[in-house]
Structure formats: structure tokens, C-alpha cells
Length: 145
Image (cartoon, rainbow, N blue to C red; front, side):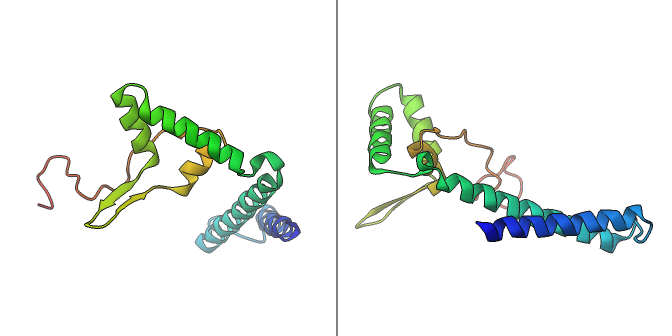
């Protein structure tokens, strides 16, 4: 935990020194190398902050996945899949499942762990976004045939 905070502080200090160099006229703000360096240090700082925040969140007792939370989530999933309107059932399953593979001896269901974690923690399923890559999709059926 302390190492993550130190990493964040180090990146913040380096970024502060870069800005001071620009303000004092030591560095040229139009220099592309300087711009790249500032962007890299900002990214490093932001990654350290996210990692630190995530580590803090995992230490909270209410952020832990317990057997009771899993059992409650299973009951919600069971109720949502067995009851309700068909369009709701489809949307619910599509939000949880990414891919289903069927072969002669087994069926494999694939999904994102983060979706199940959100469901178990009582945060619900995030709305599905627009897929950035769909293998078999062609908008006008005029290319890549």
C-alpha cells in the first residue's frame, strides 16, 4: 500500500518539476519530447492513483466477496432467468455471458469476471456498450466478403 502511494507521490513530484521547468523558461513547451514526457508521467501518476484506490477499496470489509453474497447473487440470477418476460431474460443473459461454446462432450460458457463481481457485490450489471469489434459483422455487406 505504501509503495503505491510512494509511486504516486514520485510521479506527481516529477510532473511538478517538469511544469516548473516550463514556467521558469528552462524547457520549451513546444518541444515534442517534453510533451511526450509529460504525457508519460501523467499516465504513470494516474495508474498509480488507480492502483492505490483499488487497494484501499479491497481492504474495506464490505468490499469482500463472501459465500452469503454469492448465494444472494445466485438467487437473484435464478429469479431473473426463470421468471419475467423473455426479452428481459435474453438481455440479462447477454449482459453476463460473452460466449457459449458447444462441442460433443461439454458446453463452455464464458463471461467477464468483472461483471460477476459487480453482480455479487450488489452493484448490478453495467449496461452493455457498443462492441468495438464483432467478428462477423458487416454494416453494408459490401466489404471483406
